[in-house]
Structures are given as C-alpha cells and as structure tokens.
Image (cartoon, rainbow, N blue to C red; front, side, top):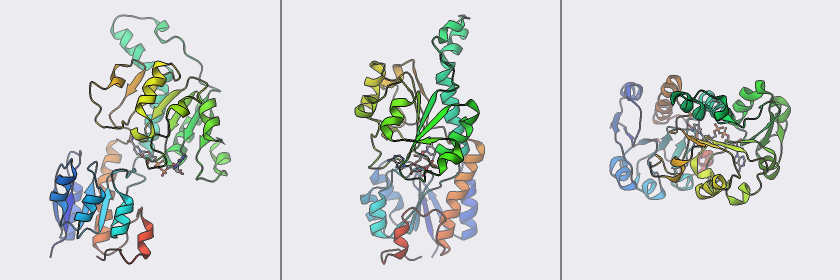
Length: 329
Ligand code: NAD
C-alpha cells in the first residue's frame, strides 16, 4: 500500500520539491491548511508521516495519529508539538535546525541598527518633508556599548560573529554551553541578572519551552538598569507581553524590535501596534529564497529517510530510539 504523507498547513508558494521527492518514493501527498486540533485530526488520522508548520500537534492530535511514524516541523522551533506525548507514543519528532542561521542573524543585526540609529522615524520624517537630523536625538555611539545575548546556540553565536566588527562588548547568558566558547567568539559569559543589568541591547535566542516561557517578565524588566533596546527573533512567548507594555510605558526599556509574537499574526488592534518605538516584522527573520528552498527540501528529505527505513538526521526525541514504543516503519 502507498504511504500517505499529510502536510497539515504551510505558507509556501508551492510544494514542488515535496511533490517530486514523494512521487519518486511512490507515496501519496495530501496538503491542507489546518488551524485547529479537529482539522488536523480529520486530515491526518491515517497518515504515515505528518509535516506541519503552525498547526497544533497536541497530545489529543498525536493520540489520533494511529499510523504516524514521524512528525516533521518546518522550522527550528517545535513549540507547537507536544514532544512528551510523541515520545510516549513512539512517534519521531524532527525539526530543521540549520536552514536559516544566516538569515535570522542578519535580521537581528538589521533590527539592532534600525532601532539604534532610528531608521523608521528618520525615513518617515524625510518623506513628510522634514529634513532634520534632530529627529533621531538622542542617539549614542555604538562602539563600546554592551549587547546581551540570551541563548548562545547556532543563531546567538552567528549574531556575535556578525556584530564583532562593531566593537560592542558582548555578554552572553546560556547555562547549557561550554564557557570555552567565550574566547572563541570574543564574548563574556555572565548570569542573567548581570546580563540584563548591564546591557544596552538585549537579543533573545532561546527556544520556547516550559523553562523559557515568559522568562522576560516584570522581575527581569525590574533588573534592567541601562534602559535597553530589546530585540526578539526567538519566540513571542519568551516575553510576558503585558510586562513588556508596562516596561515601555515606564521607559524601563527604550525601544523594542519584535519579529515574533505570542499570537501570530498580530491584530491591528494589539496595543503594541500603537507604539512608535516598537518595530514589528511578521516572523520574517528566517526568510531568504535560499532558506525557503532549503527548508522544504530538508523537511521532505527527512520524511523520505524515515519512510525508507532510515533514522532522520535531526531527531529531537532521541530517547525513543531505544524505546519499545518506537513505531516500526
Ligand atoms: P539552538 O538550539 O542552536 O540554540 C538555542 C540555545 O538556547 C542553546 O544554546 C541552549 O543551550 C540555549 N538555552 C536553552 N534554554 C535556555 C535558557 N533557559 N536560558 C538560556 N539559554 C538557554 O537554536 P537556534 O538555531 O540558535 O535558534 C534559537 C531559536 O530561534 C529557535 O528555538 C527558534 O525558536 C528561533 N527561530 C526563529 C526564527 C524566526 O524566523 N524568527 C527562525 C529560526 C529560529
């Protein structure tokens, strides 16, 4: 019988690469635009493999996927998948970790410079026939100021590398990586309180999971001493949004540049839309034509590997490899 592959949702222009790979595999591909658990269950309940972008892959959904051997997330983060439930049920969960490290780090540098050098108000003033550098006052020289990176994995490290020419002091908080990286990247490892207290710029590069949800909340805003600029390309849920709004109102922070929101897309009526000192981009940091092509190809190749009986390259729940629950191909 032909293997059945279901794409629960996607916002790509086409599925040409997936179709080619799965047709060579002799599998059938079905694609949907599911938003809810019910829609995913209806679409994927008898699938052998599921590919997902934003749709919820909850315990309830996973329990209904009786034939599913693998769920592949079209992304680095996998916060819409109940990893614990998948592991219990013997379903492999796979992400695509390295397709957009260049793009996200470029986006971070772009946002940092845009908020620091007041790109948006300057551009708007000139377009409104107001030719005056004083629109950007006050702006400080960047050299020698402190950038704090929370999370020092692939993207955090690439940001440090790309920022090195600006001669910032870069401080890092990541309790899970070797301190030896400090010398290699020209950064200092510090604790979270020191980092938020000493940074003029803060950039978030941790995954969203239980431990990091709302890690930037009123307590952490309360430790900020330098009125920092905040950049978030990680996940919206890392920051407690109400506390962010309070911090903006109380001028505890200067500006914010956010590529990710707790609920996406952000509504026009969302309070953050009205702040002139908040730049918003639509979860776009990952995008380039190269990254777009890579993620679709890599995700399809992971499904192909599993359905051919091999293990995927980027198995997240590696502990299932030795588990009796692991679903056989
Ligand atoms: P990564 O796994 O290489 O790095 C994450 C780092 O966070 C790791 O070094 C880990 O030790 C650290 N970490 C985990 N928990 C922590 C904690 N509590 N405190 C401090 N550090 C902690 O991931 P990456 O490739 O660098 O990506 C980082 C995140 O960026 C992803 O999880 C994803 O959510 C986000 N992302 C966003 C976009 C976008 O388009 N906006 C694109 C890709 C990735």
